[in-house]
Image (cartoon, rainbow, N blue to C red; front, side, top):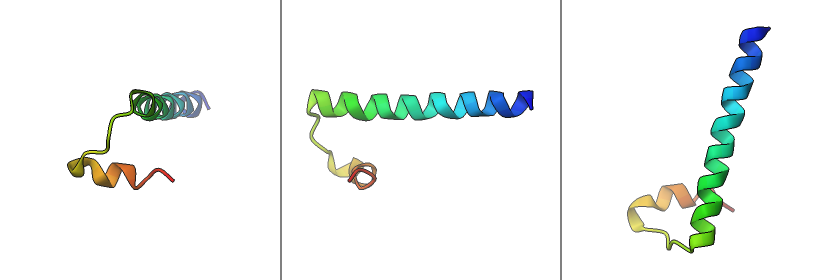
Length: 44
């Protein structure tokens, strides 16, 4: 059970990092580069 909680914590941290990165990119208004096109397809 302890290991499961640790994995969940790790997963939440990764998700939070991803969300932070995306919101930062939106705030900065960074235009999507052509080589990163597949990244932006993930967003609605």
